[in-house]
Image 1 (cartoon, rainbow over the protein chains, first blue to last red):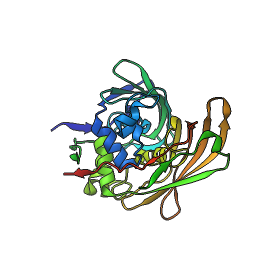
Image 2: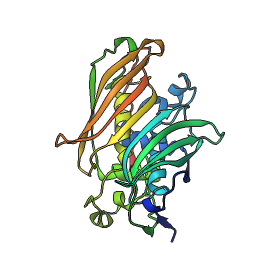
Image 3: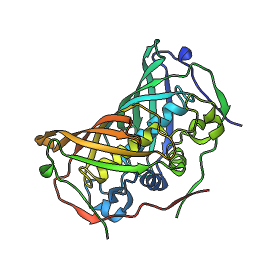
Length: 157
Length: 157
């Protein structure tokens, strides 16, 4: 079985990086609308979106925030991380079919409470920067390696 | 049909407020895991979560971020808003069955590009502050009132 492992506070070094990629599918926009309640037609209605400045449906900005949060939770520091704060700057729209790659880089460690600061960048498949930000987390003290859970199976009717 | 209307830049005043409430159901945690890829067992596995500092399953921190983004997109300024940036501070865990109320308050307007800054707070049903932050958006110039779209219907298998 594939494993889900973390990087403990003691193992983390300033300058360390990790990345996390996700394809943005039509279903992701529907799921994000369902979970957030943001049912704006610029995300859900192709005809409506064609008449906006974007010219086509765009993903919710905070979907990129969700990918950044998943990068922290799954990759660096990974399981056991406590999320303290996040800043986000949305720079370019994200469209259906885009593949986003989140890159994390550790920029600071504070030993007193195992606090780690990470620079966060999300690029699309064309190498364009779609979002930037800074995350602050409490990194896990204990090493953890668990069976990687399967994502819940969801269907859109 | 219920309508979805916006508040244009010209209509917005400093001090104006809006709120947006959501019940956090088990299905929301599953949907957020599916859409973000964050399948950490502290969110999905009740037995695992019982052994953590939280004592039970908690929602993904960024689910609260998703609710804040929906408050901006649905309530103030509403449809036509362009999301520029967001800061978030996660203060308390959110659990299944919590009802979060996001409160937005306009703190600044910049006429040159229709930029609006909003203070964002999320409280749970006990009145405890679970997250705070600041949003920066470009408010719509054009009034819009459209039929309120239905959220996509999703099922978890």
